Image (cartoon, rainbow, N blue to C red; front, side):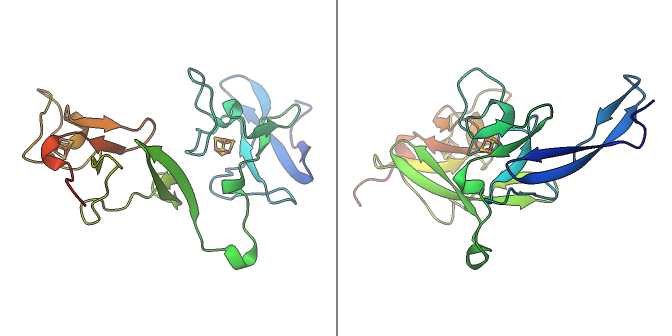
Length: 197
Ligand code: SF4
Ligand code: SF4
């Protein structure tokens, strides 16, 4: 009970956060409570973004295969001692100078020899940053080998080879190869391939 109304001051790379202890009925103890840093971003004086160890990994994450997909497992993350607060040292998420504000973060994705730069924007509805995919139906885009970029949730086309019982979309088509952790993929249907230039 001695922690009622207590706060803990956590300092991380020059940023200081006052965190309250809140009583949790389910485990019958006071626990340190963290702000929603996705809703209200906070930064170190050097512009690096504060994150929580248990946040879902973002598309910039540098993760070893087969481990948790969260900030705590990302090579860009440095956790503060005795807390679940840390700093993301990913340059793409670093706070921009005032004259760069408004230029959204771009995530660079490599897919079969093609590099795509996709905006990474805050989605209020789902409360997180998401990839804002272009409309590849309106802007056909191809890999160097002529295979067409599609999105997993696009309606299946007449060339589809669909799994029985699956959805009627590219993601359910045997011609489609999805890029891990995204809704982007490549259609390997010869009928959709670009020939010539
Ligand atoms: S890049 Fe930053 S925000 Fe993204 S997973 Fe790594 S630590 Fe988290
Ligand atoms: S992956 Fe290609 S062939 Fe399959 S439904 Fe999508 S566009 Fe059509």
